[in-house]
Length: 145
Image (cartoon, rainbow, N blue to C red; front, side, top):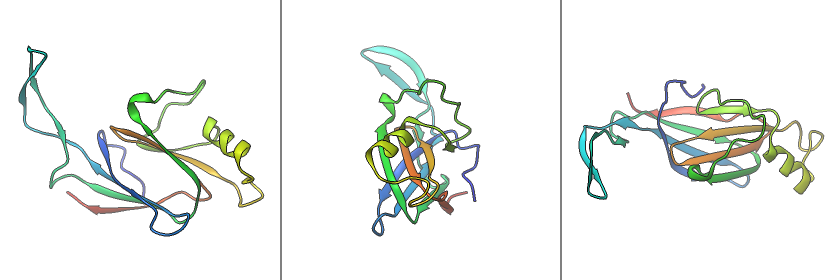
C-alpha cells in the first residue's frame, strides 16, 4: 500500500521504535473544521477553518523493520536542498540527498553493507522526517473513512 496522494494535511501522531533498529510512524489526516471567527493581535482576520484530526480522519501506520538512520525536523525550519526535485506526495523516495551524504560520511553503512540504501522523506504539517533504510516502509491504514 502507498499513502494516498490526496492527503493534503497530515499530522505526525506517533513515532517509536517497537524493536531495536525498527521504526514505526503513525500519521493522521487533518480535515478542515468549522469556520471560526479569528482575531490576532486585536485585528479581525475573518473566519478561519482549523485543520483538525477527528473521527473521520484517515490514520496510517508506516513501519520499517530495519533503519540505518532517521531524523525529525520541525517543519518551520525546513529548507530545500540545492537542485532538490519537488515532492511527489507526502512520502517520496529520494535518490540523492544531503542526508544520504551525511550517512555515508558519518557511518560505515554503504551499498555493500548493509546493502543498497534508500532515503524516504515524509512531510507533515509540523514535521519533516527522513529515513534511510534498505526497503520502503510497510504502510497500513489503521482506521478512518
